[in-house]
Length: 408
Length: 107
Image (cartoon, each protein chain N blue to C red):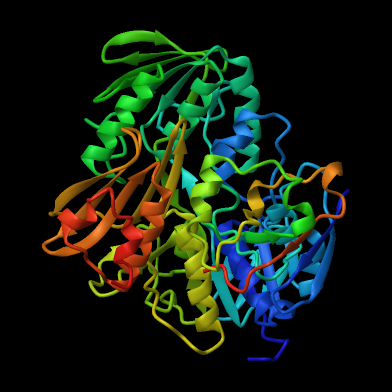
């Protein structure tokens, strides 16, 4: 494995790809590493794009590592170049520039792409999505000029953008097709709190909203038809989720099913090709249920698992999932996954704007959702990682810090 | 371009010329300084960019906000009166010469 002629080629410069570069460099394998990124920028932090970056025109991109670091680590960057085809028999990757990279290991960290609506081209002058730095820069410019914003989709990204725009004094409307916000990500109780908070801040949130038609004029979206009524639009942001970027994998004949299908060591159906991060559909530890996450935690932790696989000391991926979202005055932090059926208990915080919801499957604590309660969240991660389940009444006693139960 | 000194847990010193306006975390992780994990990328959500600010400098930084104070209770290494999250320290000319120590662990 120390042979420098055995290249490790990473496709994708998002969080997962950047984290794997860091891990490989720390393991002394930088000289074997190639990173292929479609974007011209060095890999950068994405969470600020929907918050600080949108808010402040002076805010710049925050690279994970600077250019000197990559050079010193011996990592070869292929920026502004895209992977176009994998030749699995020859173990080579073809790039758009015409270059061909041989690999001993190929790691797909291709991420996910924003979903769009048929009939609503994102190329319209006042329609935006948010995934990349280029998207964020465009949205920031559009936002500064628009008196009002319509956000399609009440998921994390849509609500973060809505809250940022509202704080900047815009009239904001959020259209969600489902009967509640954040349906795929949080409990109904937390969603209700989020809804009330956004409405309290003056955001017009419509649930069960049906978009029946688009009025397009001169390359712009002039209006939407919402529940049968015409509503004019200054700026429309689509936050209707993302789809795993699997085109390269599918064209190479790798098994894909809502993501590149991987095993516990993150191997795809080709043992020389791994997949990590947003694009990887992995088996849940214990249940084997197939999961795919779009989160910083998942990208970082899968990069660690990939390093273990690449260095011949495989460990099954079993990291505790955790997520966060900042929406206006709310810091939401989630640890663990909501059970299909379970009981929830509310742990009060210092104010009505601060609390945690503890979700139990039977006697077992499986998920904790926190609002403006970071101490609860950090303690919850420790409890869940250790498999500890404090008795609900005690765990919801606000007079006792949750961390008292760690190691108790 | 403030010059910053970071003293690693093993005593090694790293010197950085950091751009004005960047956070200490961004400058340190950009340069790959070991011991600054910065898992959440500067959102004050993870407490893995914990540093001890040199005594001489501790009083010269703006006081931590509520978010940071809460997260400081969650650091993996011992919290001290000089503990800060480096993602919340914005570098500027007035911090030329800043010295911080990196704790033994972040996770």
